[in-house]
Image (cartoon, rainbow, N blue to C red; front, side, top):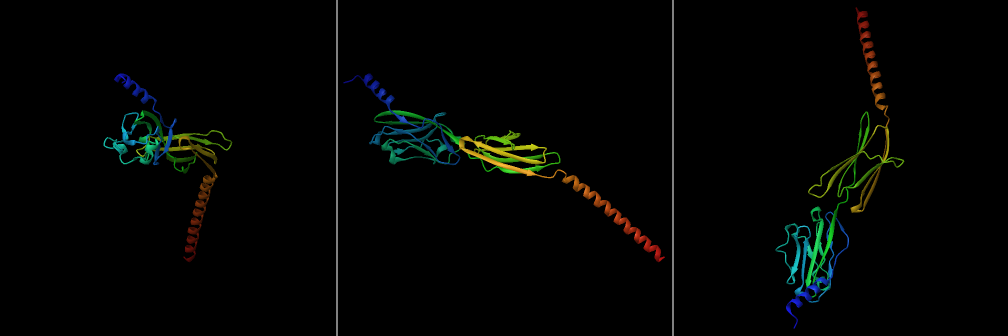
Length: 261
């Protein structure tokens, strides 16, 4: 019979060699989608001794636990209540993958999958990255006597790359405002291009690599900068004509009245 310390050493060696496979790189999950956390292990057809525990690596919050052949959710973090699910039909095949519904900004981070069965114990760590498609940019144009402002507003996450390009491809990026991410996990962005030219021919580009999003919007605008001055001149001339007409009418009435006398 093996000494107890030697038996313990052998069990620990077996435990250390237990294989758990998770994605090697970050997994990007879109806002509101269902996240799929892949975790595979060396299967054991008898799942009576199977223990699966998903935790947040940063603070050890319990995301989902399974043992005694049932889900054990008494200690589950309230942040994940009613949102997680294991595929029980796949457990005997070595699949401990977890799904998290309605993925949000606070769900981004590192997750630890720990699996124990008769073959030992193993752990795997994976990272989930949060991303949100930027909304369709909303265009507004502001005309002033001195300049023209072309502006786009949108929401998204993370902070996208924004450029204003001229007709020859030159960088015209001017002004960008970004508010802190809201509780809904979105940045509010406002970007504008200001010019003193009477003609505008620019291209607005937005890139959100995390969400694999690439947008281009062309803005072509022309107006007559002398229109205002011509309008003012026309108004001035019309005013003079009205005064002359009024004076002529008064004069004719005066002459008519004198003739009757």
